[in-house]
Length: 230
Image (cartoon, rainbow, N blue to C red; front, side, top):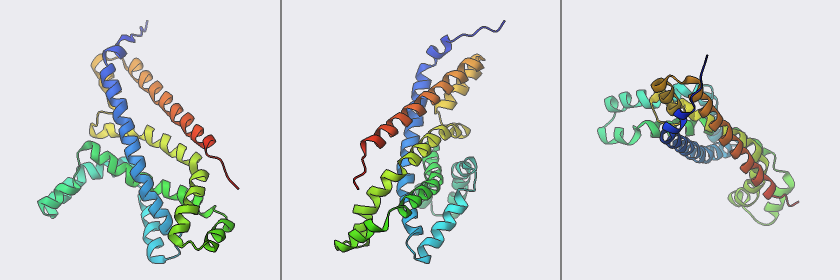
């Protein structure tokens, strides 16, 4: 008969908690950097200038069609080999990262492509009457973007940002591939040390579920707090 032993969860609670905290750190760091990059890419794509929109579109179509795991392996294993063989040592030290840094860079660059499409859709959804009102007030392109486009766009894209944030949190499990001790790494350690595979993975799966649900609830609360003023 198969006996469950949930006491291993208590024994490995420190690894689980530290893994969860690291996963959250990777999530929000990557999301913040990716959002900034994605916003810049989105404005470049809708700028109407081919020297901006062309490279931005090429970046989006290239990066988002590369598997995230492959991108992570390139930064963690490939970048040091290239940098220290081809570049001055001081420059190589700047662009070579440890495991956590490689995850943040890879995730930021990858999710920036998806966030750029979310922001681009939000920018294009801003009605012309708002833009015309801004021009009538004497606002320039930067002023219109700051005071009109960005606030309206942010309200529009919040549901999509929620989905992206949850997906990013779950994808932090990929960091286990380069031995970053996040939540999934803790589950693997727990299962290999004790052979309690079911207990280890069910526990960590439940944590992913609960945290994702909390993120969704918080983001929906933010959506309700932000009211449209027409």
